[in-house]
Length: 317
Ligand code: AKB
Image (cartoon, rainbow, N blue to C red; front, side, top):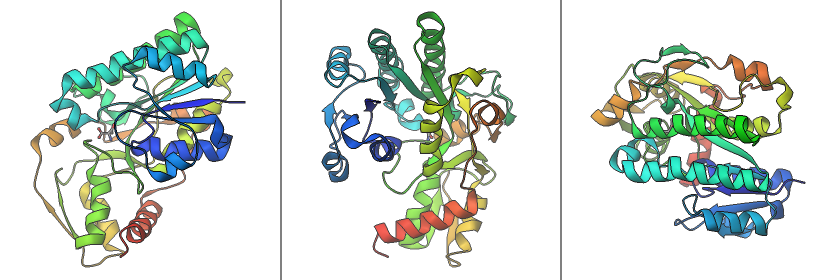
């Protein structure tokens, strides 16, 4: 039986992953770890909650021992734009926190999931069909922490046999919890503004292509990877995974099919634009497909329809 700890259970991915894991493994086996932000009622009422901070190794040890944890999903991180505002905090959570989690996992024999990102690539990476194994020289603090996390995860597996596994997530589009301070956030905000005001002002320029994925696929990717038979792995951490690639014009055109009056305008955010231009236009995720059967279910059309329906219900529109 799995006993799972989610660090960062109130974040964009954590809030939905915790509920999905509770459905799958039973609520009492999935501990929602949170730091400052109070968990939603749904999260709080559906299973155990613990205050855990990846940067506090003693507390981490205590919780892992208390619940006999065997699997840790470490989702704590500052997203790319916020990390540029607070580089020291981003390093502390994204590198020291990852190190603490791996140390605790080594001591207590836990498997660890680490979410890396398209942010682990940089200006010298091939932007089209970005290979699994390629140049990684990111020029953002977020990217630096993600590359460090990938390497630390590989190191702990090779050196100590810790069962580390991870993905390079693209921008995640979801309707439950808003992302906070990422470069790809526009692809979520556009849906709220389309429903509320039938228009959206985009911080990224037309022609800025980025990989994206709908939340149900992001959850499946994490859970399927953690359940996969490792005998087929040639890689282990940091699998490229993607589901779609679009620019602001393409997603706006898809929204217009449902809301014909929808209008897109631009007000460029130079920092987000500079970050986006160093990230892949589209990753090659064939290693994930071959080594553990990755296959996304949602492409642009289905994702857009589902998002518009869910956000309309959420906003009572
Ligand atoms: C961000 O934009 O910072 C994240 C990511 C792609 O890792 N959504």
